[in-house]
Image (cartoon, rainbow, N blue to C red):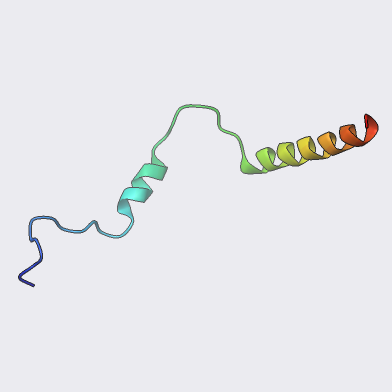
Length: 54
């Protein structure tokens, strides 16, 4: 143990991450389900438009 520094303790578990995610942030809040539904709809619409205007 002579090679270890005693002045720099390691962080305790994931307490820092929990604090980060519990903080309120400004900006638009969108549910992940809505983002996935919009993405899938956009892909399907693009495929249909590609077949129609070929």
